[in-house]
Length: 128
Image 1 (tube, rainbow, N blue to C red):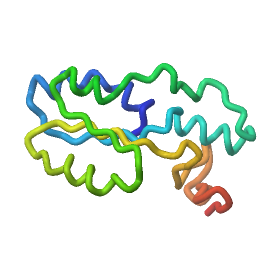
Image 2 (cartoon, rainbow, N blue to C red):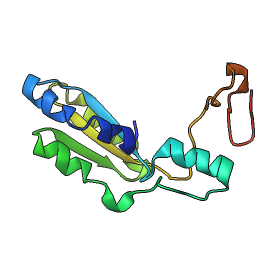
Image 3 (cartoon, rainbow, N blue to C red):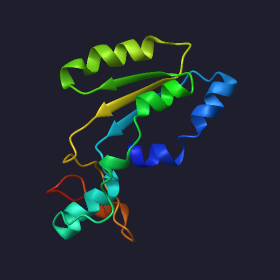
Image 4 (cartoon, one colour):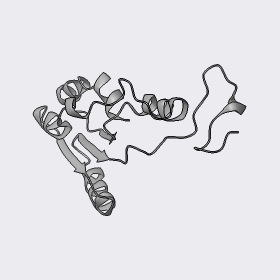
């Protein structure tokens, strides 16, 4: 998930602490509302409105730790494998994994509003 969707459910860190739920949460953080930004890139030439909020994001690692969980931040691609492996090895703990990703990356496929499955966008240049 991204930081926009994570924040819609961040209170569940409390539930997980109360019931000792050892899940792994992966936050793909690009400092944008990813899908909103992606549509603004595609349809409005990158004119952004209400899709960036890097200055107002919490420190997700500190937030996870405040609930008694483990927080892991991955900032460099070279650290991805080792840190992810270590986080997944913590079988008895909730681990919040905050991975910094390139904000220019898009997510595919994209379903077109009101369109059929055959109208999906598969890449920046390709549709089905």
